[in-house]
Image (tube, rainbow, N blue to C red; front, side, top):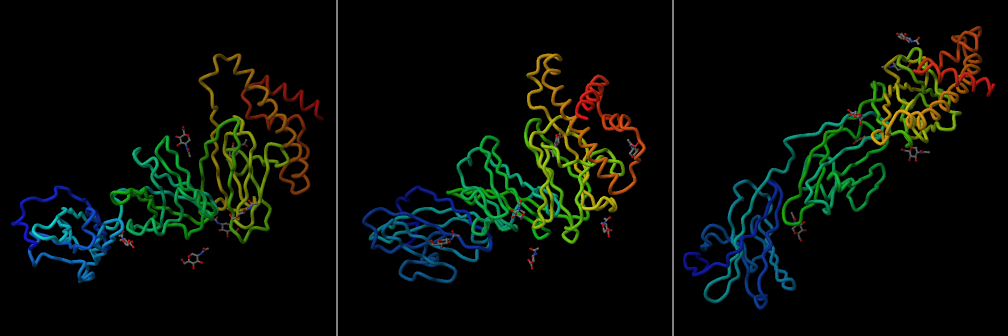
Length: 399
Ligand SMILES: *[C@@H]1O[C@H](CO)[C@@H](O)[C@H](O)[C@H]1NC(C)=O
Ligand SMILES: *[C@@H]1O[C@H](CO)[C@@H](O)[C@H](O)[C@H]1NC(C)=O
Ligand SMILES: *[C@@H]1O[C@H](CO)[C@@H](O)[C@H](O)[C@H]1NC(C)=O
Ligand SMILES: *[C@@H]1O[C@H](CO)[C@@H](O)[C@H](O)[C@H]1NC(C)=O
Ligand SMILES: *[C@@H]1O[C@H](CO)[C@@H](O)[C@H](O)[C@H]1NC(C)=O
Ligand SMILES: *[C@@H]1O[C@H](CO)[C@@H](O)[C@H](O)[C@H]1NC(C)=O
Protein backbone atom coordinates (compact mmCIF):
# COMPACT_ATOMS: atom_id res chain seq x y z
CA UNK A 1 0.00 0.00 0.00
CA UNK A 2 2.78 2.37 0.91
CA UNK A 3 5.25 1.15 -1.64
CA UNK A 4 6.73 3.92 -3.70
CA UNK A 5 7.45 1.59 -6.60
CA UNK A 6 3.75 1.53 -7.29
CA UNK A 7 3.56 5.25 -7.50
CA UNK A 8 2.59 6.88 -10.74
CA UNK A 9 3.29 10.31 -9.47
CA UNK A 10 4.59 12.08 -6.39
CA UNK A 11 3.68 15.56 -5.43
CA UNK A 12 6.98 17.24 -6.19
CA UNK A 13 7.53 19.44 -3.20
CA UNK A 14 10.48 19.09 -0.84
CA UNK A 15 10.34 20.34 2.72
CA UNK A 16 13.75 21.17 4.18
CA UNK A 17 14.06 20.71 7.92
CA UNK A 18 17.12 21.23 10.12
CA UNK A 19 17.57 19.77 13.58
CA UNK A 20 20.25 19.72 16.26
CA UNK A 21 22.03 16.47 17.08
CA UNK A 22 20.85 15.24 20.50
CA UNK A 23 17.68 17.36 20.43
CA UNK A 24 14.30 16.95 18.75
CA UNK A 25 12.86 18.27 15.51
CA UNK A 26 9.37 18.90 14.20
CA UNK A 27 8.51 17.82 10.66
CA UNK A 28 5.33 19.57 9.59
CA UNK A 29 3.43 18.67 6.41
CA UNK A 30 0.27 20.30 5.17
CA UNK A 31 -2.51 18.60 3.26
CA UNK A 32 -5.50 19.69 1.21
CA UNK A 33 -9.02 20.26 2.37
CA UNK A 34 -11.08 17.08 2.51
CA UNK A 35 -8.33 14.84 3.89
CA UNK A 36 -8.85 15.78 7.55
CA UNK A 37 -10.19 12.38 8.59
CA UNK A 38 -7.65 10.32 6.65
CA UNK A 39 -4.68 8.58 8.26
CA UNK A 40 -1.31 10.41 8.06
CA UNK A 41 2.12 8.92 8.47
CA UNK A 42 5.87 9.43 8.19
CA UNK A 43 8.10 6.92 6.43
CA UNK A 44 11.58 6.71 4.97
CA UNK A 45 13.46 4.81 2.27
CA UNK A 46 10.95 3.32 -0.20
CA UNK A 47 8.01 3.69 2.18
CA UNK A 48 7.46 -0.05 2.17
CA UNK A 49 5.69 -1.64 5.15
CA UNK A 50 8.96 -1.86 7.08
CA UNK A 51 9.77 1.77 6.32
CA UNK A 52 6.73 3.12 8.14
CA UNK A 53 7.92 5.08 11.18
CA UNK A 54 4.70 6.37 12.72
CA UNK A 55 1.03 6.83 11.81
CA UNK A 56 -1.76 8.91 13.32
CA UNK A 57 -3.41 5.59 14.24
CA UNK A 58 -0.66 5.04 16.87
CA UNK A 59 0.47 8.55 17.69
CA UNK A 60 3.58 7.60 19.67
CA UNK A 61 6.19 5.00 18.73
CA UNK A 62 9.85 4.76 19.75
CA UNK A 63 11.30 8.22 19.25
CA UNK A 64 8.46 9.42 17.02
CA UNK A 65 5.31 11.32 17.93
CA UNK A 66 2.67 12.53 15.49
CA UNK A 67 -0.06 15.10 15.83
CA UNK A 68 -2.66 16.01 13.22
CA UNK A 69 -3.99 19.55 13.49
CA UNK A 70 -7.15 19.23 11.42
CA UNK A 71 -8.03 22.92 11.74
CA UNK A 72 -4.87 24.17 10.09
CA UNK A 73 -4.56 20.92 8.07
CA UNK A 74 -0.97 20.34 9.17
CA UNK A 75 0.31 17.14 10.70
CA UNK A 76 3.54 17.29 12.66
CA UNK A 77 5.91 14.46 13.42
CA UNK A 78 8.36 15.06 16.27
CA UNK A 79 11.57 13.06 16.06
CA UNK A 80 13.46 13.15 19.36
CA UNK A 81 16.96 12.07 20.40
CA UNK A 82 18.38 12.89 16.99
CA UNK A 83 21.53 11.11 15.84
CA UNK A 84 23.50 11.68 12.67
CA UNK A 85 21.93 8.53 11.13
CA UNK A 86 18.53 10.23 11.33
CA UNK A 87 19.56 12.74 8.68
CA UNK A 88 18.31 12.17 5.14
CA UNK A 89 15.13 11.70 3.18
CA UNK A 90 11.64 11.12 4.63
CA UNK A 91 8.12 11.13 3.23
CA UNK A 92 4.97 12.55 4.73
CA UNK A 93 2.03 10.45 3.55
CA UNK A 94 -1.74 10.60 3.56
CA UNK A 95 -3.41 7.17 3.26
CA UNK A 96 -6.14 7.27 0.63
CA UNK A 97 -7.79 4.69 -1.56
CA UNK A 98 -5.44 3.87 -4.38
CA UNK A 99 -2.24 5.90 -4.41
CA UNK A 100 -1.24 7.76 -1.26
CA UNK A 101 -0.30 11.43 -1.31
CA UNK A 102 3.38 12.04 -0.56
CA UNK A 103 5.47 15.03 0.39
CA UNK A 104 9.23 14.69 0.37
CA UNK A 105 11.15 15.80 3.48
CA UNK A 106 14.88 16.38 3.65
CA UNK A 107 16.20 16.34 7.22
CA UNK A 108 19.55 17.96 7.85
CA UNK A 109 21.32 17.69 11.21
CA UNK A 110 23.79 20.17 12.65
CA UNK A 111 25.77 19.97 15.88
CA UNK A 112 24.24 21.69 18.90
CA UNK A 113 27.30 23.87 19.48
CA UNK A 114 28.79 26.97 18.00
CA UNK A 115 31.04 28.31 16.44
CA UNK A 116 34.38 27.91 14.68
CA UNK A 117 35.35 31.47 15.48
CA UNK A 118 34.87 33.03 18.90
CA UNK A 119 35.18 36.76 19.59
CA UNK A 120 37.06 37.40 22.80
CA UNK A 121 36.02 40.35 24.97
CA UNK A 122 37.89 41.33 28.10
CA UNK A 123 36.65 43.61 30.84
CA UNK A 124 36.87 44.30 34.54
CA UNK A 125 34.64 43.99 37.58
CA UNK A 126 32.32 46.97 37.97
CA UNK A 127 32.74 48.06 34.36
CA UNK A 128 30.17 48.15 31.59
CA UNK A 129 31.04 46.19 28.49
CA UNK A 130 29.46 45.99 25.07
CA UNK A 131 29.39 42.86 22.96
CA UNK A 132 28.99 43.46 19.23
CA UNK A 133 27.09 40.89 17.20
CA UNK A 134 27.24 41.41 13.43
CA UNK A 135 24.56 39.91 11.20
CA UNK A 136 23.78 39.78 7.49
CA UNK A 137 21.62 42.50 5.98
CA UNK A 138 18.75 40.13 5.14
CA UNK A 139 18.05 39.79 8.88
CA UNK A 140 17.35 43.50 9.54
CA UNK A 141 13.88 42.84 10.86
CA UNK A 142 14.53 39.52 12.53
CA UNK A 143 14.47 38.98 16.26
CA UNK A 144 17.95 39.32 17.84
CA UNK A 145 18.94 37.85 21.19
CA UNK A 146 21.83 36.75 23.36
CA UNK A 147 22.15 33.83 25.75
CA UNK A 148 24.83 32.31 27.90
CA UNK A 149 26.57 29.10 27.02
CA UNK A 150 27.14 27.39 23.74
CA UNK A 151 23.86 25.62 22.91
CA UNK A 152 22.03 27.01 19.89
CA UNK A 153 19.02 24.72 20.47
CA UNK A 154 18.03 26.34 23.78
CA UNK A 155 19.46 29.81 23.23
CA UNK A 156 16.25 31.72 22.45
CA UNK A 157 14.40 30.00 25.26
CA UNK A 158 17.10 31.06 27.73
CA UNK A 159 17.83 34.46 26.22
CA UNK A 160 19.14 37.10 28.63
CA UNK A 161 17.58 39.77 26.45
CA UNK A 162 15.91 39.98 23.02
CA UNK A 163 15.42 42.88 20.64
CA UNK A 164 11.77 42.94 21.74
CA UNK A 165 12.84 44.03 25.22
CA UNK A 166 15.76 46.48 24.74
CA UNK A 167 16.53 46.63 28.48
CA UNK A 168 16.44 43.86 31.03
CA UNK A 169 18.18 44.52 34.34
CA UNK A 170 21.88 44.90 33.66
CA UNK A 171 21.44 44.05 29.97
CA UNK A 172 20.61 46.38 27.11
CA UNK A 173 20.26 45.48 23.43
CA UNK A 174 20.69 48.05 20.68
CA UNK A 175 20.14 47.05 17.08
CA UNK A 176 21.97 49.20 14.57
CA UNK A 177 20.29 48.15 11.33
CA UNK A 178 22.45 50.50 9.26
CA UNK A 179 25.68 48.76 10.15
CA UNK A 180 24.08 45.34 10.56
CA UNK A 181 25.25 44.91 14.13
CA UNK A 182 23.41 44.54 17.36
CA UNK A 183 25.15 45.44 20.59
CA UNK A 184 24.50 43.99 24.01
CA UNK A 185 25.73 46.11 26.90
CA UNK A 186 26.18 44.51 30.30
CA UNK A 187 26.45 46.85 33.29
CA UNK A 188 28.18 46.34 36.64
CA UNK A 189 30.12 43.29 35.53
CA UNK A 190 31.05 40.62 38.04
CA UNK A 191 33.32 37.65 37.52
CA UNK A 192 30.16 35.56 37.26
CA UNK A 193 29.56 37.21 33.90
CA UNK A 194 32.70 35.55 32.52
CA UNK A 195 32.08 32.76 30.04
CA UNK A 196 30.56 31.90 26.69
CA UNK A 197 27.70 33.77 25.07
CA UNK A 198 25.83 33.21 21.82
CA UNK A 199 24.42 36.04 19.74
CA UNK A 200 21.35 34.74 17.89
CA UNK A 201 19.28 35.92 14.95
CA UNK A 202 15.93 34.22 14.49
CA UNK A 203 14.98 32.67 11.16
CA UNK A 204 11.55 31.34 10.40
CA UNK A 205 12.31 28.67 7.82
CA UNK A 206 15.57 27.34 9.22
CA UNK A 207 17.61 27.13 12.42
CA UNK A 208 18.73 30.49 13.81
CA UNK A 209 22.09 32.06 12.97
CA UNK A 210 24.65 32.37 15.74
CA UNK A 211 27.96 33.95 16.55
CA UNK A 212 29.98 33.15 19.66
CA UNK A 213 31.53 35.50 22.19
CA UNK A 214 33.80 34.71 25.11
CA UNK A 215 33.67 37.30 27.87
CA UNK A 216 36.40 37.48 30.46
CA UNK A 217 35.82 39.68 33.49
CA UNK A 218 38.93 40.26 35.54
CA UNK A 219 39.20 41.19 39.16
CA UNK A 220 39.42 44.86 39.85
CA UNK A 221 42.87 44.60 41.42
CA UNK A 222 44.22 43.50 38.05
CA UNK A 223 43.03 46.54 36.16
CA UNK A 224 45.85 48.12 34.26
CA UNK A 225 44.50 50.38 31.60
CA UNK A 226 41.55 51.20 29.41
CA UNK A 227 41.32 53.29 26.27
CA UNK A 228 38.39 55.57 25.57
CA UNK A 229 37.62 57.59 22.48
CA UNK A 230 35.43 60.66 22.87
CA UNK A 231 34.07 63.30 20.54
CA UNK A 232 34.57 66.98 21.26
CA UNK A 233 31.37 68.70 22.34
CA UNK A 234 29.74 65.50 23.55
CA UNK A 235 29.37 64.22 27.10
CA UNK A 236 31.57 61.40 28.35
CA UNK A 237 31.72 59.28 31.48
CA UNK A 238 34.94 57.90 32.88
CA UNK A 239 34.33 54.80 34.95
CA UNK A 240 36.46 53.93 37.90
CA UNK A 241 35.71 50.75 39.81
CA UNK A 242 37.28 50.00 43.16
CA UNK A 243 37.31 47.01 45.52
CA UNK A 244 34.20 46.99 47.67
CA UNK A 245 36.12 46.81 50.93
CA UNK A 246 37.70 50.20 50.20
CA UNK A 247 34.42 52.04 49.56
CA UNK A 248 34.94 54.35 52.54
CA UNK A 249 38.32 55.56 51.31
CA UNK A 250 38.61 58.87 49.55
CA UNK A 251 38.43 58.67 45.76
CA UNK A 252 40.81 60.32 43.39
CA UNK A 253 41.05 61.06 39.71
CA UNK A 254 44.08 62.75 38.32
CA UNK A 255 45.56 63.54 34.93
CA UNK A 256 49.12 63.23 33.67
CA UNK A 257 51.44 60.88 31.86
CA UNK A 258 52.81 59.48 35.09
CA UNK A 259 50.89 58.34 38.10
CA UNK A 260 53.45 59.69 40.60
CA UNK A 261 53.15 63.29 39.44
CA UNK A 262 49.71 63.54 37.86
CA UNK A 263 47.44 66.52 38.51
CA UNK A 264 44.35 65.93 40.59
CA UNK A 265 41.08 66.78 38.92
CA UNK A 266 38.94 69.17 40.90
CA UNK A 267 35.34 68.10 40.67
CA UNK A 268 34.21 71.61 41.48
CA UNK A 269 34.60 72.50 37.81
CA UNK A 270 31.24 72.89 36.23
CA UNK A 271 31.97 70.53 33.34
CA UNK A 272 32.97 67.71 35.67
CA UNK A 273 30.81 65.89 38.16
CA UNK A 274 31.89 62.98 40.28
CA UNK A 275 29.32 60.39 41.22
CA UNK A 276 30.15 57.64 43.65
CA UNK A 277 28.10 54.48 43.56
CA UNK A 278 28.90 52.23 46.50
CA UNK A 279 26.34 49.66 45.25
CA UNK A 280 28.24 48.97 42.07
CA UNK A 281 31.55 49.67 43.79
CA UNK A 282 32.61 52.30 41.31
CA UNK A 283 32.65 56.00 40.83
CA UNK A 284 32.10 57.94 37.66
CA UNK A 285 33.44 61.21 36.39
CA UNK A 286 30.94 62.78 34.03
CA UNK A 287 32.17 65.42 31.63
CA UNK A 288 29.31 67.44 30.19
CA UNK A 289 30.96 68.61 26.96
CA UNK A 290 34.28 67.11 26.00
CA UNK A 291 37.04 69.48 24.88
CA UNK A 292 40.14 68.70 22.86
CA UNK A 293 42.35 69.44 25.86
CA UNK A 294 40.62 66.75 27.90
CA UNK A 295 42.60 64.18 25.94
CA UNK A 296 45.35 62.50 27.87
CA UNK A 297 46.04 59.93 30.53
CA UNK A 298 43.93 59.75 33.68
CA UNK A 299 44.40 57.69 36.81
CA UNK A 300 41.82 56.86 39.40
CA UNK A 301 41.36 54.80 42.52
CA UNK A 302 40.23 55.11 46.11
CA UNK A 303 43.49 55.98 47.78
CA UNK A 304 46.40 57.76 46.18
CA UNK A 305 48.85 55.87 48.40
CA UNK A 306 48.16 52.49 46.80
CA UNK A 307 50.45 50.36 44.72
CA UNK A 308 50.28 50.54 40.97
CA UNK A 309 48.02 47.52 40.50
CA UNK A 310 45.24 49.24 42.37
CA UNK A 311 44.63 52.08 39.99
CA UNK A 312 42.70 52.29 36.81
CA UNK A 313 44.55 54.00 34.02
CA UNK A 314 42.32 55.62 31.40
CA UNK A 315 43.71 56.86 28.14
CA UNK A 316 41.29 59.31 26.62
CA UNK A 317 41.47 60.41 23.00
CA UNK A 318 39.26 63.26 21.86
CA UNK A 319 38.25 63.47 18.23
CA UNK A 320 36.93 66.62 16.60
CA UNK A 321 33.72 65.82 14.84
CA UNK A 322 33.98 68.18 11.87
CA UNK A 323 37.71 68.50 11.24
CA UNK A 324 37.24 68.28 7.48
CA UNK A 325 34.76 71.12 7.34
CA UNK A 326 37.11 73.66 8.86
CA UNK A 327 38.40 75.52 5.82
CA UNK A 328 41.41 77.39 7.16
CA UNK A 329 43.51 78.16 10.15
CA UNK A 330 41.71 81.42 10.89
CA UNK A 331 38.42 79.68 11.46
CA UNK A 332 40.17 77.05 13.51
CA UNK A 333 41.47 79.76 15.81
CA UNK A 334 38.02 81.30 16.12
CA UNK A 335 36.46 78.02 17.06
CA UNK A 336 39.22 76.58 19.13
CA UNK A 337 40.93 79.26 21.10
CA UNK A 338 38.10 80.49 23.35
CA UNK A 339 37.33 77.05 24.80
CA UNK A 340 41.04 76.42 25.23
CA UNK A 341 41.46 79.68 27.10
CA UNK A 342 38.42 78.94 29.17
CA UNK A 343 39.68 75.49 30.03
CA UNK A 344 43.07 76.82 30.97
CA UNK A 345 41.62 79.45 33.19
CA UNK A 346 39.44 76.81 34.79
CA UNK A 347 42.55 74.78 35.30
CA UNK A 348 44.16 77.73 37.04
CA UNK A 349 41.19 77.97 39.37
CA UNK A 350 41.32 74.24 39.91
CA UNK A 351 44.99 74.38 40.58
CA UNK A 352 44.45 76.99 43.22
CA UNK A 353 41.78 74.87 44.86
CA UNK A 354 44.07 71.93 44.72
CA UNK A 355 46.88 73.96 46.16
CA UNK A 356 44.95 74.93 49.22
CA UNK A 357 43.73 71.37 49.71
CA UNK A 358 47.15 69.88 49.30
CA UNK A 359 48.53 72.36 51.78
CA UNK A 360 45.94 71.30 54.29
CA UNK A 361 46.31 67.61 53.69
CA UNK A 362 49.99 66.97 53.23
CA UNK A 363 53.18 68.73 52.59
CA UNK A 364 54.37 67.17 49.37
CA UNK A 365 53.63 70.44 47.60
CA UNK A 366 56.00 73.22 48.50
CA UNK A 367 54.27 76.17 50.07
CA UNK A 368 57.09 78.43 49.05
CA UNK A 369 56.73 77.93 45.33
CA UNK A 370 55.92 81.30 43.82
CA UNK A 371 52.36 81.57 42.55
CA UNK A 372 53.41 82.59 39.07
CA UNK A 373 55.64 79.55 38.74
CA UNK A 374 52.77 77.27 39.78
CA UNK A 375 50.56 78.70 37.12
CA UNK A 376 53.22 78.18 34.52
CA UNK A 377 53.59 74.59 35.60
CA UNK A 378 49.91 73.98 35.08
CA UNK A 379 50.16 75.62 31.74
CA UNK A 380 53.08 73.38 30.87
CA UNK A 381 50.87 71.34 28.56
CA UNK A 382 49.97 74.34 26.42
CA UNK A 383 51.77 74.60 23.13
CA UNK A 384 51.53 78.35 22.63
CA UNK A 385 53.26 81.02 24.63
CA UNK A 386 50.63 83.51 23.57
CA UNK A 387 47.88 81.45 25.14
CA UNK A 388 49.94 81.14 28.25
CA UNK A 389 50.24 84.91 28.51
CA UNK A 390 46.56 85.50 27.89
CA UNK A 391 45.65 83.03 30.54
CA UNK A 392 48.00 84.49 33.00
CA UNK A 393 46.41 87.85 32.39
CA UNK A 394 42.97 86.40 32.91
CA UNK A 395 44.04 84.61 36.05
CA UNK A 396 45.21 87.89 37.43
CA UNK A 397 41.79 89.22 36.59
CA UNK A 398 40.15 86.39 38.49
CA UNK A 399 42.50 86.80 41.38
C1 LIG B 1 7.72 20.89 18.28
O1 LIG B 1 6.36 21.22 18.42
C2 LIG B 1 5.89 21.17 19.76
C3 LIG B 1 4.39 21.39 19.73
O2 LIG B 1 4.07 22.51 18.98
C4 LIG B 1 6.61 22.24 20.56
O3 LIG B 1 6.20 22.19 21.90
C5 LIG B 1 8.10 21.96 20.49
O4 LIG B 1 8.80 22.99 21.15
C6 LIG B 1 8.56 21.88 19.05
N1 LIG B 1 9.96 21.48 19.04
C7 LIG B 1 10.88 22.12 18.33
C8 LIG B 1 12.27 21.58 18.40
O5 LIG B 1 10.62 23.11 17.64
C1 LIG C 1 28.04 33.77 41.15
O1 LIG C 1 27.47 32.55 40.78
C2 LIG C 1 27.39 31.61 41.84
C3 LIG C 1 26.85 30.30 41.28
O2 LIG C 1 26.57 30.39 39.94
C4 LIG C 1 26.49 32.17 42.94
O3 LIG C 1 26.42 31.25 44.00
C5 LIG C 1 27.06 33.47 43.42
O4 LIG C 1 26.18 34.06 44.37
C6 LIG C 1 27.24 34.43 42.27
N1 LIG C 1 27.90 35.62 42.76
C7 LIG C 1 27.48 36.86 42.45
C8 LIG C 1 28.29 37.96 43.03
O5 LIG C 1 26.50 37.06 41.78
C1 LIG D 1 40.09 54.88 19.20
O1 LIG D 1 40.48 55.43 17.96
C2 LIG D 1 41.65 54.86 17.41
C3 LIG D 1 42.04 55.65 16.17
O2 LIG D 1 40.92 55.98 15.39
C4 LIG D 1 41.38 53.39 17.11
O3 LIG D 1 42.52 52.78 16.55
C5 LIG D 1 40.99 52.69 18.39
O4 LIG D 1 40.65 51.36 18.12
C6 LIG D 1 39.82 53.39 19.07
N1 LIG D 1 39.63 52.77 20.37
C7 LIG D 1 38.43 52.50 20.90
C8 LIG D 1 38.42 51.90 22.25
O5 LIG D 1 37.38 52.75 20.28
C1 LIG E 1 56.85 62.66 36.18
O1 LIG E 1 57.45 61.44 36.54
C2 LIG E 1 58.11 60.75 35.47
C3 LIG E 1 58.57 59.39 35.95
O2 LIG E 1 58.94 59.42 37.29
C4 LIG E 1 59.24 61.64 34.93
O3 LIG E 1 59.87 60.99 33.86
C5 LIG E 1 58.66 62.95 34.47
O4 LIG E 1 59.68 63.82 34.05
C6 LIG E 1 57.88 63.61 35.60
N1 LIG E 1 57.21 64.80 35.06
C7 LIG E 1 57.23 65.97 35.69
C8 LIG E 1 56.52 67.10 35.00
O5 LIG E 1 57.78 66.13 36.75
C1 LIG F 1 24.46 52.38 41.27
O1 LIG F 1 24.70 51.11 40.71
C2 LIG F 1 23.57 50.25 40.81
C3 LIG F 1 23.99 48.89 40.32
O2 LIG F 1 24.59 48.97 39.06
C4 LIG F 1 22.42 50.85 40.01
O3 LIG F 1 21.29 50.02 40.11
C5 LIG F 1 22.10 52.24 40.53
O4 LIG F 1 21.13 52.84 39.71
C6 LIG F 1 23.35 53.11 40.54
N1 LIG F 1 23.05 54.36 41.19
C7 LIG F 1 23.36 55.55 40.65
C8 LIG F 1 23.01 56.73 41.46
O5 LIG F 1 23.89 55.63 39.54
C1 LIG G 1 46.08 46.93 46.20
O1 LIG G 1 46.02 47.52 47.49
C2 LIG G 1 45.98 46.60 48.56
C3 LIG G 1 45.79 47.39 49.84
O2 LIG G 1 46.76 48.39 49.99
C4 LIG G 1 47.25 45.75 48.56
O3 LIG G 1 47.19 44.80 49.61
C5 LIG G 1 47.35 45.03 47.23
O4 LIG G 1 48.55 44.33 47.14
C6 LIG G 1 47.30 46.03 46.08
N1 LIG G 1 47.23 45.30 44.83
C7 LIG G 1 48.15 45.43 43.89
C8 LIG G 1 47.96 44.57 42.67
O5 LIG G 1 49.06 46.22 43.98
